[in-house]
Length: 397
Image 1 (cartoon, rainbow, N blue to C red):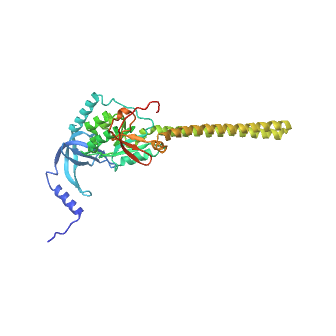
Image 2 (cartoon, rainbow, N blue to C red):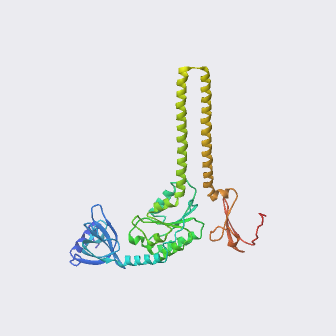
Image 3 (tube, helix red, strand yellow):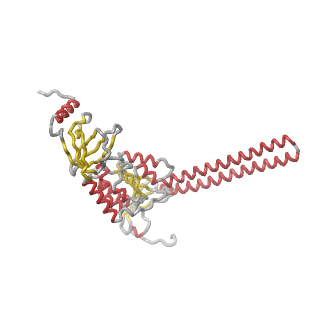
């Protein structure tokens, strides 16, 4: 005979009543480290209590303004079930602060160790106009959407290469390290390491010493945009540029392109203002001249004013045309500079790009040797070739 099924809510209610009837679970004293602490709009405090192997959710129906992430505490309370989600948690009645937790202590010691080794001091300059930007993040995360949206806010021709990786969990460490190595073997100008916000545990991979060391060893400048404004990891300290959010990191990388747009807008505004101001002055002079003509009407003065009017008109036209021509010339120069960064334009002219088997662009004969495999990229196709002979070319012959 089959049992009659019950609803999920009834099951959770039963479990909650069962836990509440247990005298041991109603009078708990649990020791652990605080993480992911936050206060709701209602004044309640939520946090996670962890040890080396496990975590449990806690809620205080009061505002705890003393405890901080990393504190070692003893909580007194009862075990209960949050019926809506079917999760259990400790309802905290009292919190006793014991000291700094081991996890935070270990992190602070590691931070001081890296600082004493000078790993926080190496800061490479970012390129003003990056042509290739490498991003290490999860393609499915919220961070990449904010980054792409920020990049699309400028009218500039640069390439974005995304290295899809896990950004939390044990396997994410190797993914991130592989991403840094991958971009260091490519011709990117800057590397952006990013992920959205999360708990201390979610972001803890960026406190891993191996990830921090790989960032420090990078020959390319590294920018980090990890979590929210209050989050800062070891990777952030070692990076060449630290930004408090993914959006801020993207803004920092393309700041050079934004400056160009601001300068262009300023020049256009100045041109319009000066032209309108000059036309206003000359219009006033013209009205004054008409008034004088109506008052005196001497034929000689009429011809004189007419000549002055023609001269002023020509001067306005010539001056305006010259300013517009100068502005167009400056805009054309800036546009040519922006277009010149696009390697695809060079491919359309018949040029090609030659790389080795790892994708590195070849610029010097010392980068290749006989029997190496090359990849040659043309406009519409790619060719794989093998080097049979290397000869030096003198005087372009």
